[in-house]
Length: 161
Length: 270
Image (cartoon, rainbow over all chains, first blue to last red; front, top):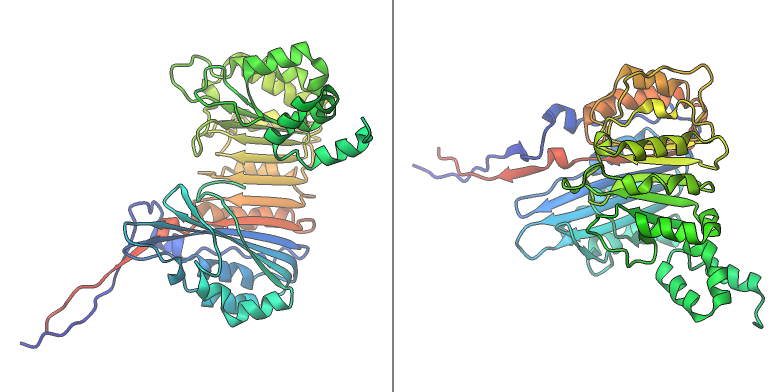
């Protein structure tokens, strides 16, 4: 018998998932019917656990694809780690979002980041905690042009700000 | 005092977000105290008298204490522009919110009023609030002589939407938790809204869409903080269609928690 290591990927919804998978995976908000829209703020949560992570970026990308020209785009991303290991926020892959932002039709883009461990512990977003983001060429280029600014903020996963 | 009061007032205006520092400045001299008052009391939080929370942040007051303050110094009521009412969810309190009722008619310069609970992510149940408070709150919203522009309601649903029917001054509404549509009649001349925020709605009723259609044709700002993607799918096209010619500012909260996935690797044999 030959033992072949064949990964079988099982994807399941977390216990928190109270909506059908089809409904959650295909969130589409079409903004093309809003021709006068000038200021768009999108807020999303990204959860990381020891088992894996969930990524809101595809949904954000879908929304942004439907926008026309914007004066300002603000992305507020709350990254939250639940687990017992030493957390590395730097595991987040920003490339899908950054490639979109670089071609985004917005005069200014604000990226607001809130890094949290559990519900209460806040970690400052910086080049130390998120080197993959802060040291990316796209980010450096957009910041140099004054199109993008990144700030660390402190807000909760559930809070309204 | 050598420095003109206007200059000090201007400096204090930058300290409005730091009420503790303002309070410390106020204690330094009676003149400073008077100059600081409009900024100290502009944005305050009021708690149920039996609340377990503390009031040490310089902007939070227990209802009884605030009532005493406003009775003894009635001019302070004119400085209050933004009021957050935090209702206690403590089950042992009968008729939560009783202490708020006598305060509300005193605050005629309010620009914004919000009804929240003292516990984050929990909202007051309207039916549990005392009849006196509910009546005072309603009267405060409907007062035609007020300057009230913005109302934020964080409730565990059942907030009666009809209460806004005759609010002539309110231009901005935030509703957290689906409201109650009972007895909802669209008035012939409803107030037109500039800003609408819908947070954590669990259902959408056609009556709400009829209500919104009459009010948001000139809407400039919309905020949607909805966890249920089915509601997002249903509501967004409807609302966008109603205000497409005016909407310039949109805030969207995209939730992905419900599809939080885990990936398991297993071994297969062949």
